[in-house]
Each structure stands twice: as C-alpha cells, then as structure tokens.
Length: 470
Image (tube, rainbow, N blue to C red):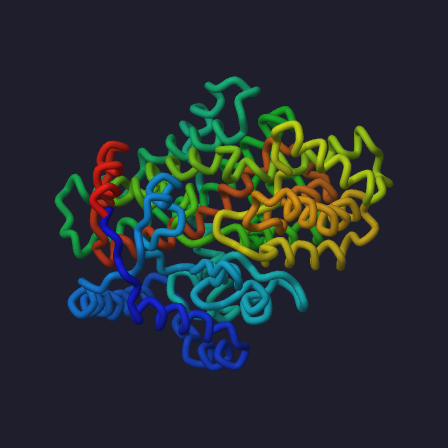
C-alpha cells in the first residue's frame, strides 16, 4: 500500500476554515461578500470566470501536492476520512459542524433575509448564498422567490406517472419517480444533443436546476396528498415564499409550521459532498447526466436507512418508547430502554454521525426552535431526556466515536407536533431540501468543468500483496 505524507497546505486550508468561525472574521467576510444585482443568473455569469481562473491556478501550482495518508482502513471502510472531492457550497468540520459558504447555521440565522422579524431564514436566501458565496438582500430574495414561482409548473404526465404506482408505494419511490418523469423537459439534454460547447454547459444546467428546485415541492406535495389525503391536492400560493408555500401545499396553514418548514429546508439543504445523496448526485452528474437524472439518483441514495430514512426511524423509535413506557418515562427507565435497544442488536436512531464529533448544529437549532414554540410538548421533553441519557450509554458501550445527537434526532418531533405525523413521508421533505445543495454544486461542477469521477478500486489480494511489501 502506498502511504502519502500530509503537507502544510492542508493544514493551512483547515486553519483558514477554522479562523472563519470567529464572529469578527465572519462579519468582516460578510462586508465584502454582499450581493448587489437582483438577477441570480447574471451574478453567476460574473463569478464563474473568476472561479474558473482560481481552479486553474490551484491545479497548476498545487496539482502535485499530497493531501494526506490513504490507509487500508479507509479503503475497507467506505473511503471514510479520505479527502477526494471538490464541493464548494459547504464544508463540514468534525468539531464545528456545517458551514454554508463559510457561514455557520447560527450566522445564517442572523444574516439571511427572513419572512418576518425574528423569524427563520428564507430558503431562497440560502440558495443565493450557496450559488454565489454572497449574502443576498431581501429584494434579491423576493426576486428569486418570484422566479421560482414562475418555474413551478408540472406537466400532466408527471402526475400520471406517479398515479401508475400503487398508492401504498413508499413516498420516496413515488417522489423519485416523479423527478424522473420531469426529466423529459431537460434543457441540458436538448442542448447537448444539439452540440453545445462545453464552456456553456453550466447555462442549461442552471435552467434545469432552477426548474427542478422550483418543481420538487409540487411533486412532493402531490405524493403526500395522494397517499394521506385521498388525492385532494392544494394549488400553490404565489404570494408565499418557498418554504411557506411547500407547507401550504401539504395542507398546513399555521404560521409556525411555515417557519418550521423554512428552517427545515434551510438546514437540510447541503452537508458537504461526501454524504451518500450529495456524492451520488455529483457522481452521476460527472458522466454529464442532466440534473434530473442526477438528482433522482441522489434521492435513491437518500432513501437508505443509513442516510435520509433515519429521520423516519427516529420518530418511530420514540413512539415505541411511549407505547411501551408512557410519555412520563423517567431517565432511569429510558436508560434501560436504550440498553434494551442496543442489546437487541439495533442502534439508537438519531445518534452518531460519520464525520461530526459533537452535537450536530442542525439538532441544536431545532432544539432552540422547540424551546421557543413547543417547550411543553411531551415528545420534545422526551427528546430532551434522550439528549441527557443516550450519550453516556453510547460512551459506556465504547464502540461509538460520536455519541451525540444528529439532525434526525429532532426533526420528526417538530413535524409531528404541527400535524405532519406520517413518519414514512419525512425523507421526502429531506429530499426537497437537498435539491438546493445538490443542484447548486452541480451548476458549479459544470462551470468549473469538473471531470468524470473514476476512483481506482483494488482487490483484497492486491491489498495483501501491497501491505506485505510495505
């Protein structure tokens, strides 16, 4: 096995990312990264040549620099810990958590435009930030909201395709099928077949991506109403923003539910490029598959129990606790139930993370939302007890690198409180959110001309032979 030595460049890059965590540095960064024009596409057209030159410089000056050690454990462990992808829209630090273009979730809550004073960030604002690296004004966000509304139309054949499935099919199956049915309108596919120059790939990709982001809430809402509300669909409301309109089409008129959906879509939008759904979308798109094909593939990865389906599993597990022990379960009883779950060969859903080594900031902001809006809710109080009980148990177990709760440990309880009780549907909400991050990065993949992804694979015999030589 060949072992690569770490170099100072990686340390410097990591140090720079950590430095951005300071509030002072964040404020200074924001002062020079504020958008000016109202049109998102025009903003990108100005940014792309600069970033293309930046990538060329990195490749020419640092292309041979080694970034770390590749071990057999990494090869056998699902490439865990390998640095091997370029993902501009967000960066995940094991200790700090996610940063969207350098901004933490609390910072995004402070600086991104909101629908009402003291409210949660508008997803359109985060989309602008992900694509440009700049904080938009309220006027820019309003303009983007209107643009997405204008793109939010669904051809009849999409609904007919979904209707061809049994109504009992899993919501993610119906959702992914709907996205695939949208693919026939792909602008990228049409442009590629006509012979578009590769320097222009990003333009039809932008059109597809913006259309897709605008359309997925309608498809997702149709699936929900088809499965749980006898097919009684609710038209979009063009006076509402992205998150509120999604909640409206699902059938929820509460202003607090609208706020929750804004928060939910924002914090679930992107989580670096190595997670299954993001990586899958990037991988499939690297073959020049259009955004619809790429995102549908990402959804199929998101549907796995070890990824997006976990938010469904958390609420079901919490409800099993209530069914067996009651809502007023003591911490000692809860500890016994956690051990019972672990001793049966199962995991406690919602705890641990492949990268994070602390409480997920996405969990924290949802907890803050609950403390503000539903502090007396019994299930929220149970989640709070789990926060105290589970980490010590997992630490005692000794097999978990991160015993702290992740984003999935909290989202289901909030949704359940406001009436969205159908846990099987929760991953669809995750999918709608993830469209913002995956499509934003895909546009930059095309703009930067990133190549076909093709890592090298080896056999166990090859590993054995290489290690014997080492």
